[in-house]
Length: 164
Image (cartoon, rainbow, N blue to C red; front, side, top):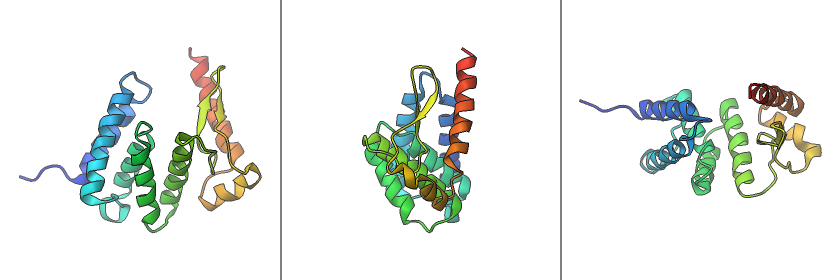
């Protein structure tokens, strides 16, 4: 009897990730998922959507995005992702992961996807490289305008703070 497919494993790991977000054990889940993703990459390469489906590729990206404790893995995933043929979903994933990698290196982000929470609970963007050219870079990657994205995060952040 065959075991679960790679796609099934990735979907299971991403469900674990999402169930643990904002919970005390999230770091432990993220670490275990990252270890599993590293094994998958070593054995299969990047789980591209053409072979495993867009949901499996999304799951791999999500695990990489949350692997802040392992910047080398994030950088490896970014390199592998950039090697794939481009499409809209992949461009979005590259933009988010590129910014995450840059943030974890202490560098300004390129696409304005990464925010942090300030002391008042509001979302503020991580430093942005060349803000004057931000909208052009975002458009090239298929991202919505920065003001729209930022406003949505502010509303989410406001609702989160309001519930406390």
